[in-house]
Length: 286
Ligand code: ATP
Ligand code: MG
Image (cartoon, rainbow, N blue to C red):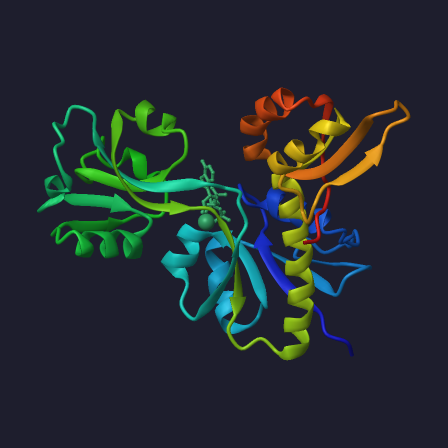
């Protein structure tokens, strides 16, 4: 029997859609099976397991799943004996300390002797230790933001993205203690056959990620401007230069990082570039 890589993803929640999207962008097609718990592919040796995100680090540590996708916050909080394979760039959020907005907050020393409600006791206690703060951690599994209002705690440590949940509960964010994004984690004793499948999967994911951060750029320029324009365009190796039908003009093609594009566009125009086109790249193999 040939090997299949088992990937655990969140069944329903903030990570689910983007996790499935990554698999799709890698050209992996899933069978529409009857099972809601697993799904197999007909063109790549992978099987998806749909689980609660909190359970994924344990399944991966035990090797029930070979790899998994979770928030770094969950990986660090629950994860023992797992490999960190790759950051995936979505579900970005932070774990922060927050206090009632009436509190005059000066420094983290405020929390000395206080009670903090959280669903992340490990990350919080690591932070408190590193800051030499003595506080009592009150672990609750959900609706942490209501704890100060009902007198359960003096402050909270919870996930923040926009901060609107805090504000609507009369709280303010005072310290960011952990930054998170989705990560791929892996079983530490993965077999070499499965590792080979994993390497193929990572190669595809990286090609898609490189495609996303790069754009394909085409522009026209008079031949005497080509040298200067090539200096402005980094390119994968070196830009492609093709003659135009119009005598003395060329078309220059290259790839450029999106975040470098805006700062270079002015320079390109000054150097004589015209008819600049920037188009998305679906995949990029370096
Ligand atoms: P489950 O029922 O599977 O246990 P959950 O309620 O624990 O789900 P979600 O709210 O779906 O989890 O969040 C999953 C992960 O998404 C979090 O662990 C965190 O890494 C990230 N996340 C949480 N809130 C946000 C947010 N507002 N913006 C971006 N990412 C977030
Ligand atoms: Mg959860």
